[in-house]
Amino acid sequence: MKLKKAFFSETKRYVTGVILIAILASCILIDIILDNVIFTWIILGVSFLLGFKEALRLFECKESYVPYLCLAIVLWCYTFFFETSIESALFFTMILAGILAYKQKITPKAILAFIYPTIPFIILFTLYRDFGVFIIVWLILIIAICDSAAYFGGRIFGKTPLSPTSPKKTIEGVIIGTLFSVVTGGIFGTYFLNYNLFFAFFISLIIAISGILGDLFESYLKRKANLKDSGNILPGHGGILDRFDAILFGAVTMHYILPSFLPNKSNSLFLLGNL
View 1 (cartoon, helix red, strand yellow):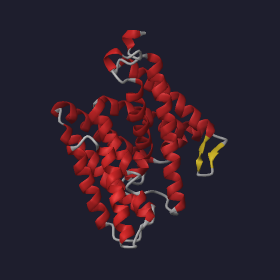
View 2 (cartoon, helix red, strand yellow):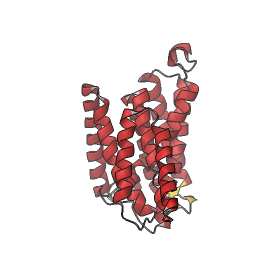
View 3 (cartoon, helix red, strand yellow):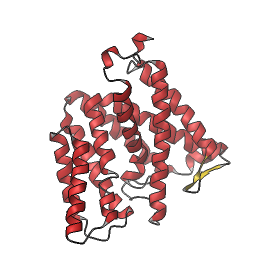
């Protein structure tokens, strides 16, 4: 009965969720067919700019958004042509901070938007460019399973609040979400990406935990800004950052771990063939 009530209580959320899954599946299929980085760069770029605008709102930037959005567009274009995209984000942020300081109009909260979500979005694109579309599928699968299982698990079994930052989240829900995502992600990483079983489960666990931290971070920003959602572009889900928060944290973690543990995938001890 609890499961039925939890499922039917937010119909709009699930309809939007199905649409998002369909769009994601279509994007992946198109990416595979076209085998061209431009398509993914455009899709992520639109998401980034929408999320960037939401971040300016979350950080309570009082100035006109136009100059910051223009600089964000330039930065995203730079990301397409140069592989030093992470360094470029820091460079642009440093230049912006210096110019604002020179004009004595420095707004630290506006500068924060060039750290989050800018750098995580750039890392998400870099992850795709370095490892391919199926790594992104793996990342999203882990995050989506963790989020969904934690949501329903918390609604049914949740009793102990996880943190005042996000009162609706429960420790029981987080445990259930993490277990489901680790099992699902471990199987996917082993059989579809040919990673060692231990490594696939390890990655899935770390990404699931990172996603939960990303969700808490976004909740904290909204609470400080006295906002329920980062935006309203997605009915039942809120804004772009409400959907990308866990993915962005997971992308940063995955891009950090994969090169560290797999400096040379052809001879890595973590490949399935070396079990």
